[in-house]
Length: 410
Image (cartoon, rainbow, N blue to C red; front, top):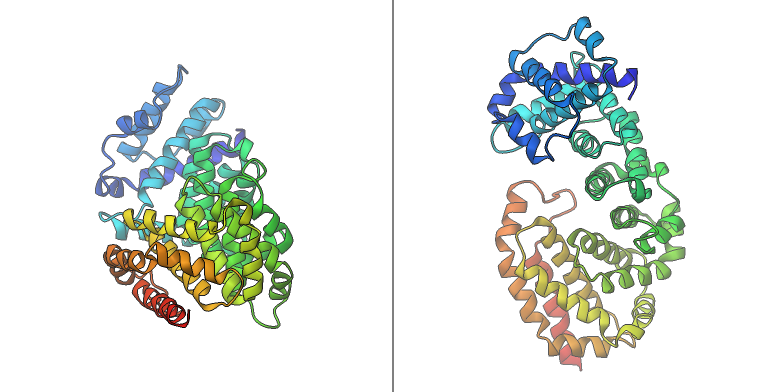
């Protein structure tokens, strides 16, 4: 790890030692047990005394002395253990649970706005960039995703997260999962600020539609979310809109194919790709482009996309305890409405299928199942008032009206 990590270790120990009161508040009382839960001791003889050193420092709030640094600087194993254990403590302290939420938020703020902790975010990012330790990478990603980062640090964080996702052979699944979540959150909240750190639009479409062995699923999810954000924010004279329009038809087929062939029913994957499909249909694609994309799926079945939408409705209705399920249902409902609105060669067959499977009844069941989730999202601030929050019930009523209108005309 080298001398830089030794300096980083002292910073983490300082944070842990100064945070004893928060440790007690959040219930961190049995460090050894939790260490065992994260994989237990290895066979290295230095582990036990190093852990005792760390725990003693935290519990006694001992100052960090030059003597301590001198004693550990040549012991790489001890340094790594100190950093790993300190990351665990900081990760717990910055987690906003019911207990200690206010203290956690305060610490997240202080870590990047006060001088007493030094260059905390930059040092944690250094660990993420240079450590091959899975748990260190996981914890560092979690912590950084909670902090208010400077523009420069955020930009560097995005680059590191993309590297973790673009090189899946070097990143264990748990690390990729955390990196994917962190990058998705950054795309949703600050995507415009680091657009230049992502590949160009054509490359994003290629990555999004690639097989998992070319680009891991987590990165494909992120690229779909970035494309959806670009579509949502595009304007008539926007350069990105012109580029998106030029690849819209190909992109829509790629998106629909990805949705249809997603056999694992990965909710984050479906949420991102369904959301992108909605944005393309609403902002870029013509009815004919949508029909062409669906026609391209015919080798997989005449009504394959409609069948997939029905399956998703059933699956999500039966498992409606997660906010992401609500997002999925809203996207599916919008796509059902889109199919009912357009007048293309595929419309009669899809509308007949929706009637055969009682899609209206299924949508009503989803509204009932997710009513509590909708209330939760509104009450906890998850609804974006600036964009005008639209409830699932409102979307379903619109879809039902369109379907009824088409039935009366047929």
